[in-house]
Each structure stands twice: as structure tokens, then as C-alpha cells.
Image 1 (cartoon, rainbow, N blue to C red):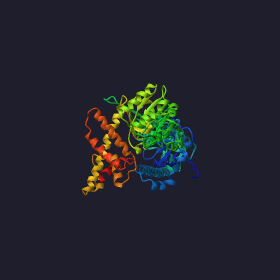
Image 2: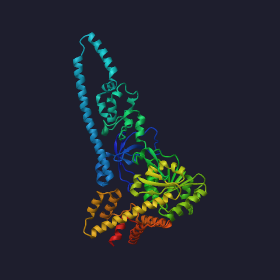
Image 3: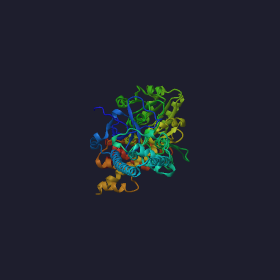
Image 4: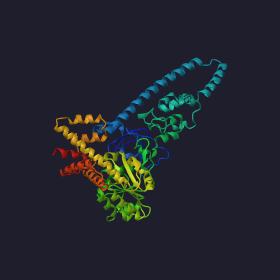
Length: 542
């Protein structure tokens, strides 16, 4: 593809890598906050994501002009998120066009009024000239910001944001404009001409009352900076979450610590992509080395063994399939434990039982390391979108050190206390999810065999109290016969088995989970292990 010149304000299509994991994004090139670090390496632009209002650094080779590639992208991308982005940018362009027309109309009206005024007030004598001079001085003194508008041309009105126009029209804001106001103007693309009022104007947010009262540029930065909200609960758990919807992830400042990541499966791949996108320095390892190649292209470094990754990084995350894999990764040859020395940090994000994670914590700490368990609730799509929910327990200081990483990969993280609590909570969450999925499949098959429309059942459920993204997506999978894995069936069955064992350990009955587990075992016997969990449906029709 020939090189295309891009500049501030341009609308572009961003193609993230690996392309098979991520849909394209519709973006606008904007100015970053002054104290947001630019990633090292290749040339990149700071962009706003239409449809989600996220912000991030994107490499220039991943960007294409929006208008030139719009139709091509719409044809090959049918997802709701991409369509929402298209709708958002088209609305943006409609508003831009409307503002251009208004600006042109106002400019013509202002010009006519000035010409008329000049005709009426043209001086005919020296005395009149002196009077006019005195009058003009008085007008200049009282007009304030109007002076700038007349001298620079009234077309500038069309380029001011509604917020700035409201400030200029407010009686409290009349008077001399700020000294540095002229410096807020930037070169702009013809695509968005008339829409931008300053370096931060491309960021879209609903101003708070305090922001309306203040015109300081610092307010603009604060409005788009991702804030943390600490919530103490009676249980003693703590959550760190974005106060303004999660993945305004582009405004986070990445930690300067070196990050390692072990395991590039469905969940790990999305997590690493988001860590890199947000500017973290990441070293990766995977049992199947070929999976690392795509991330190396995106700027990650390659570790030859888990021990090497841990020894060269400050914080190493791991996300593997089950308790055996988690133990092998730490205790096996060239494993994590061999790279642990005092001060090294290890964060296990695998969904395992409390006994396994407690054993791993003990061996890590015995070598002087720091340990945190942090299993994640979500699926492949949520991992790719940076919308996971992280459940953490163990070293509280390490939890706080992971703050920027957790913000990059998830919308919320909870600190649940001592090691083992996160594992127990994660198994309970997945027990509920797995049982619900089995019930959905059971309901759809019952509808079918009794002559009812499965689609109508879904429509009814989507209008009731059970309506959710999970319900809709999994039912759509079943109706379309598409069981491409978003959460492997074999892993939800593993979690159900571990949750039942957790109940047995405290003599607590789990009959619903036990029944669901049997259905999943039946689906596994039908060779559905590597399909999505929604393939449990096939256990009812065979």
C-alpha cells in the first residue's frame, strides 16, 4: 500500500494486529495530553476511537484513510461494535457539515452588517473622524472577546465547541480573552474543519458543571484521564475500576516496570495485545513458540523459557489452562521458580483451585518473591476489548503495582484479601455461568421438541429480566450453529468440577452445578471439548 500522508484531525481506519483476532477501528488523529508518554519505536499517532471514546497510540502503518476504505470495511465487518463506530463517525460528519453551513451563514451575515455599518458611519469631516476614533476605542474596551472575532474573521465561530461558545456568551466570561487563547488553534483536516477548537477538542465527553465553569486547559486533560475509584466494602474487599467506563484505556500511563507474560491462549493473547497497545514493555513466552511471532511484530520481546522471562522482568503474569499446567509452569524444568529471586513478582491469572494457588504462593514467597493470584472473568471477546473483570488476592502492594496493567486489560479489578479467596470466587462465578449456559441450551431444545420457535424464545428472553449480552450471544451461537470457541467447553466443565469439589470440601450441596457438569461431560464425549461452551446444546440433541 502506498504511503499516505496523515495529519491531525484526519479520520482513519485502524487495523490492529493480529488481524484475525481484532476487528478494525474507526479513529480520529488527535493531540495527546502533554504528560502522556509516547511509546518507543516506530512512528505512531494518538487517536480517538469512535463508538467507544477510547484513546490510544497506534502505529502509522496500521492506519488507512477512512473515506478511501469505508465501503471495503463495511462489507467485510458486520459486527455491532464496528457498526456503532460507523454510525458515530457519520453523525460526527453530519454535525461538522451543519456547523460549516452555520459558520458560512453567520460569516456572511456579519460581513453584511459590518458593510452596512461602515456605510452609515463613514466620516465626512475631521471632527467626525475624531468622534469615530473615540467611539471605536470605547467599543474595543467593552467588546472583549468580540474584538478577536471581528479581527480574525467570524468564520472562527463555527470552529468553537458548544462549551467554549457558552463560556464566551456567559456574562461572567465577558472581557479580555486569555493571553494564550490564540495558541489553542491547531492545523485541521478538511474532513473536520469547523469542529476543532484546540488541542483537546477532538476528545468527546459530557462536561460536568465544574468543567463548564472553568476554561483551564487542565480541565480538558482531567476530563479524559482515566480515574481510579477505590471502594471499600464490608467484606474487606477492594475494587479498582474506571470511574468513566473501562476502556478509556488510552489515557492510562503505563508502569515503567518490565512486564512478562506466560501463556498466549484465548485470554492471554487479548491481554498481551492490550498491554502493548497501552505502552507497556512486555516480554512473552508460550509453550507453542509460533504464537509469540505476532506479538513480537507488535513490539513485544521474546523469552526463551519461563525462568528467563521472570529473571529479566519485574512483574510476570501467567495465564494457563488448569491446575496441572499452572504447577508445571512454576515447578517444571526452566520454570518460573528458577527465575525467582528477592523482589521478583509473579501474578497467576489462571482459573485453578485454592489449594493449587496456595501451594504456588508458598514456593514463590519462599524464594523471596512476591505473589498475587488474579484470575479473570470474561471470554475471548472481552479479553480483546480490554473489558475483563480481574479478581485478585495475595500481596496488596503488588496488586497496586499492577494497576496500569489491570486497567489496560480489564474494566474492573477486585482485591479479595488472602491467597485462595480469588480462586474460590472465580470458581463460584464460573459455576453460575456454566449452569446458566446449560439451562439456556435445555430451554432451546425443549422449545424445539414442543414445536415452539427458538428465535421467538430468544426474543422473549431478551425483553425480560434475563436479558444480557451473554444470553443473546450464546443463543445466537446455537441458532446459527456457530460454536467457534470464545470460552472453551472443556474449561467451563473443568471449573464446574472444581466448584463442586469446593462445595464438597465445606460440606455444601451443589446439585445444580452437579447436574450441569454431567451435561458438559456428555458434550465432551461427543467431541465438543474444543468448541465454545454453547456447544453443550449438542448434548441435548444427540
